[in-house]
Image 1: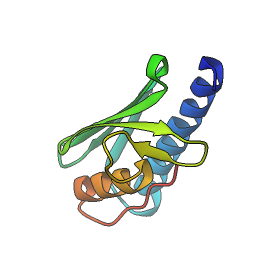
Image 2 (image 1 turned 180 degrees about the vertical axis):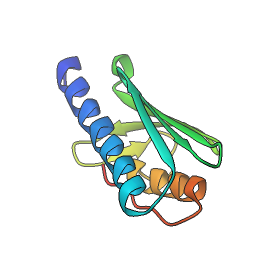
Image 3 (image 1 turned 135 degrees about the horizontal axis):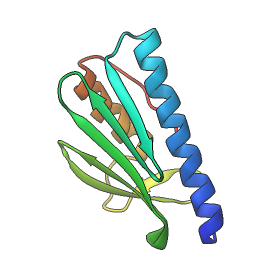
Image 4 (image 1 turned 90 degrees about the vertical axis):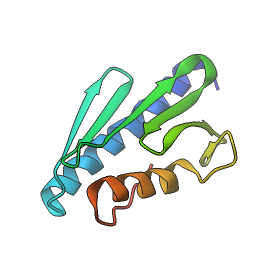
Length: 109
């Protein structure tokens, strides 16, 4: 995939995550603020936890920074896989945001 295709794919993921955070606030009463600046999405929870997701076009990866660590994900045409063998992006983010919110949340990417 070329850089333009990657950027469009990554922007779609960030858009969906931002929309889901808005839904958590309105539907699940989760106090989370989603703010986007270019290719960086920051989710700030009432607990003080911040989760940052950003795209890295040169490496064609999405990066996640969370209290549990930093993670890199690469798309295989279907799923964003952890480059170090951890759970895929949707599962990892579901675990991370659930811990930050103090209630179960599901992320779809």
